[in-house]
Length: 411
Ligand SMILES: *Cc1c(COP(=O)(O)O)cnc(C)c1O
Image (cartoon, rainbow, N blue to C red; front, side):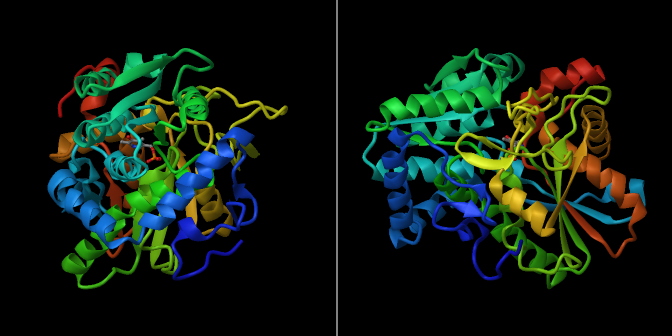
């Protein structure tokens, strides 16, 4: 399975939407074919449109805040005694995470489609929060589908969603988490697509949603590339880019400028949620070698039982608690371009603790998984290696969970 150079990875699918011939596609009900076609045409019409790009870049400048910081974590580097550790502070973005990039594109497309309503799913609550923010900004009605288990554990983001005037639709089916919220949101869209635009909060779903999301988060690595050139005068040799992977939108955005580099120069490491140390449950389809299944309109490695039923997942971080993963990450795994590992709940919490003790940053539990991997490998590497962790979310939303497990929370 080969990746082509010089072509964005989101566009390396066949005419049915499959990456590498087997991942992704459009496994949707007949009734969704037309809305998906319409959305595909809309996106293709605008993705290279000068005015569309000008408006987007203006929003990145004045609304998201650009660039997000690129900083050296000198205390962590000294403490671990090995590779040089840096962070890309994507949590600086308005709203506190990378989900804002995708939300902006969807709101702009919703406007161009002349629709007045937008709907989406959310797990950690960040995607819901960002959609509620852009909905308010663009004057759109907004519904956010969210599992009742996540509503309980991500209160700060729920408060933000409601404050922005959006409705949270509680989803009480299945595991009451992100997977069920996405299903319910797609179901709602099927019957309301003439008036309502749908955005999916990660690099998953039918092909067009994968493409829109990746196109949006790619801003992260455009910024990073410039920042690397400013800091080092070039793209350093022995660079490792570490990102947590739920659906995989932040990882795609963080890596997208670097796929064409040799993996010895720029290694891409994705960190999935390994779940509690002594549990069989996890949310790590790539690193725990799950089989290919179909979920939310796409074929991908998927946590399932021998009958192909989706299995329950478990992770301390709602944002990573998803049984499947982007078809693009399946391609990256099979092609060998990226490698995937997992961190357990305990490792993520310990990483949060160490990083916040030593540095003035406060990553949420999702990027804490990526920090856990950096902490594991940094001491084994020498100081000619550069590790960069995407700190893609702010911990404030996790304060209750962190307090419960670590006894205190400081930001
Ligand atoms: C949603 C979310 C994730 C997981 O989603 P990806 O699509 O894998 O990026 C990770 N971190 C944060 C902070 C999130 O909000």
